[in-house]
Image (tube, rainbow, N blue to C red; front, side, top):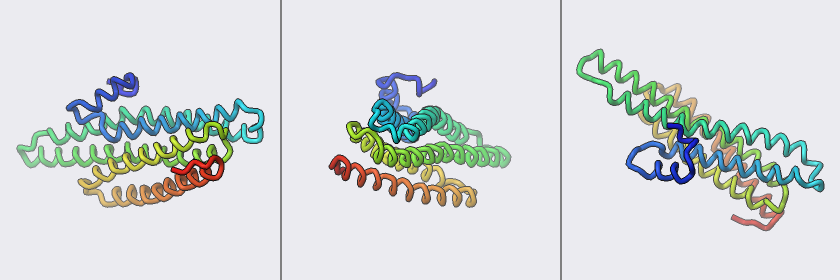
Length: 212
């Protein structure tokens, strides 16, 4: 099933049913794609105004970037579901002999790595989305500035949600170097995300007296 192609209602119902997928990682990716779409919308609304012509080139770049990010994040929905399914398949492997136990253990470890990689990539793209939100907050069409706030707040929430999915999968990993690298990157990402969100809040407070 291609979850990204479901209607909104169908997707919400799939999330709510007894199956563990789509779960938090997939929902994070979807919310991230919506955040990118909002930023793209404000950039387009800025391009439609001649009084923002000094910033048209920047907005064109942001539109292109957000198109790319929302496409990638929509793909991450199904990648996340697939990764979780692979973890479950690995845990269901037989463990009656020493050889089977070893094979199962290796499969579990590899599947956990992939299950951590997908939400990690979601985090990485969300970090970039928030950086673009700062530029749109500063130079975008002020009549749509509340949508930039919405995008930034959604992106930060989706980032934290995806981050939680990385961390839960890292807990059972034995590859310490892999864990260390991802944890270091996530720490860096978190600082950048928090800084970008703070900037968006400060800019929108100054430009439009919106204080979240």
